[in-house]
Amino acid sequence: MNITKQRFVDLNKWMLYVAIPVYLIGLFTPVKYMQPGLIFVFGAAFFCLLHKDYFASRLKSAAHIWLFVLVMTVTTYPIPLAKVAGVNNTILYSITLFLSLIPVLVFMFGRTEETPKKKERLAIISFRIVFQLALLMAFLSVEAFCFIKETRPDLFFWAMFHVSTVALLPFLFGRVICGWMCPNATFQDGLFKNMTYKRPIPKLPKAIEEQSHTCAMNISGEVDKRAPLMPATLLLSWFPMFFAETVFDLTQVAWYPIVFMYGLIILSLLFPWRKMCTHFCWLSSYRGLAGNNSLWRIRYNKSKCRNCKRCLAEEACAFYIDIRNQDNEMPTTCCLCFGCMEACPFDDVITFRRDPEEKARLKEMLKAKA
Image (cartoon, rainbow, N blue to C red; front, side, top):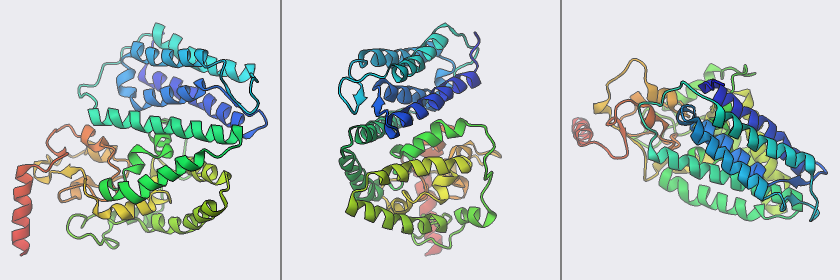
């Protein structure tokens, strides 16, 4: 069987299409049952989708990833997550076993004519994918335990999540939550980006889109002169959700974090890839505001840019930043996913450190304005 890149993507997508309702049925219905192997199904499917250019041409490697999921599903069979100890649900276990077995067989015995990409995946992106999938699997596990066992271990998870993403990380790395930590970001980049159905809202109104290309709200000076602090819609969406979250903190309503995160995921289906993140995600509003003067950003060496007619870096940007119009580094809207750095065919344009030639250009620019 010939496995094209599209077939590889489709198979992993269908594993998720089946795993998602099984997960929800186990949590939010009287069944109250889930096999631990199902969490690994999520991890393997997203891992393959996020690395599709690599694994589509290396099917045996993808088969070994799914083989690990199969082993975990079989070995964790005696210890399901259930409301009542000792209860086994044969149907849900069989579905989980089926989800882990099919990709192993297809990828192990399938063949492909896909060729590996010439440019290898950046190590920082590989690390980012492992990190964000670990958090996604932790989120799914904690919420499952919360609703099946009817206890509240998720309070500690959300406490640590908010302490790190509100009080610490924005001031160091800006909007890094949107590239490394948010479960919805993983769904967006792994699943939603690969979905081809017609979106109910194929594009945002021009008045909203233009918020991403104005300096009217900018307060950070020369660095971000050509990029906004945050779109107005993003900031406005923060106010009602801030009060909703305050109520949750005071009353400890268990349903709030589920409605909060799942609402983001469902609403994201209405818009093109990442448009929910760029203009309406209340989770990233304050993070972007606090990260306006973050200590670490990706450098854009404008003096090294070849000014290609088609900018691959801009096409890869999750937040649609007009990179070539920046002066010397990415604006506060950047989520540090490093997609632009990997997409740019030239190694010295988008980098971790500012190029000496770029430093000289900035000095000359400052002297001219003095």
